[in-house]
Structure formats: structure tokens, C-alpha cells
Length: 84
Image (tube, rainbow, N blue to C red):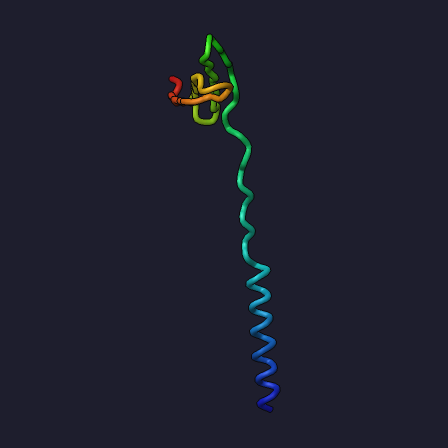
């Protein structure tokens, strides 16, 4: 009799663990799509600029790069601003 009770408790425990493992909600995938859309670039001499727009927030990102040693860029600065 005790063996049957232990067997039933063990099977019940395994069934509950399996149910909990299956019933766990799945995690949503991370949205990795870029939110900034490129809207323009400009270059003059050794400096260049690029502008990006985020339509969901209404912000603009402007980045400027300066010359470095050789063909490398140094000093990239970006600024964001909210459009009216």
C-alpha cells in the first residue's frame, strides 16, 4: 500500500513539474530593427555629417566626424534633438 502511495506522489510531482514547464509563457523576441532612418549626409574638407530621423519618437540624430591620423576618423560627436 505504501508503495502505491509513494508511486502516486512521485507521478503527481512529475506531472506538476512537466505542466509548469510547459505552461511557462514564452519570452517575446527582442526588437532589433533599427529605429533611426538616414535622411542625409554632407562632407566638406576633412569633416562629414550624417542626419538620422526616428519617426516613432520624433527625434533627429546628427553626427559629425573629424579627421584623424592617416585614413582614420577621430572625434565622432552626435547630438539628438526633438522635432516640434
